[in-house]
Amino acid sequence: MNKLTVVAHIHTDFKSKFGIPRQSGLVEGLLGRIVFTPPYRNVEALRGLDGYSHIWLLWDFSQAHTEGEGWRPTVRPPRLGGNKRMGVWATRSPFRPNHIGLSSVRISRIIPDSPQGPVIEVEGADLMDGTPIYDIKPYLPFTDCHPDARGGFAEVQNQSLKPLDVEWLPSSAVTMDAPTKAVVSKLLAADPRPHYQHDAQRIYAMEYGEWTIRFRVEAGTLIVVDGEHR
Image 1 (cartoon, rainbow, N blue to C red):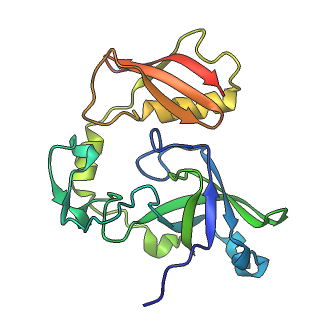
Image 2 (spheres, rainbow, N blue to C red):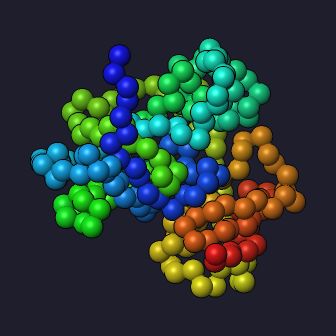
């Protein structure tokens, strides 16, 4: 059996897991740069890719590896509050026999001759900064898109989740530029809190790029209380 090889790493504004969208493509405007490892910095490998709008990324849940632990047939999906078990094959949990993630992202542009070799800039990635990429495949709309597909318990739960209203206190992030603030607002509206936490007085902290955003949630409104530029 061949060992999986890391062909690239993605660089994003997510320095920690908290706040990363729960699926790819949920928040528009999230940018990422795919930088290939030296053996694969060959522009010829990207020939023809500019004809596609989206790609699939197969990647490593590198922060979910636990030494000495075997696989478990069931997991506790956060979407169900962490209290109900589902079969691992019915979830996208990172805790699985092989820690492989799958994301569909939009190609923003391809830079063939950057100082780091050929680079793919993408939008909508749900990956932490530095995540290893195992493979890249083109997204084929005529076969990969299934409008009549069912989404199981994830779809049912998603339909019951209403985006949060986001309110920025006047002093929360006065130096944040408008595009960054718009992206952060979309991230916050998706409610980055664990589904089982509903303490209206608790202050949460989310890192995004060079910012630490602190907020609390009360009665369906997420209130940004502070934005610290690191």
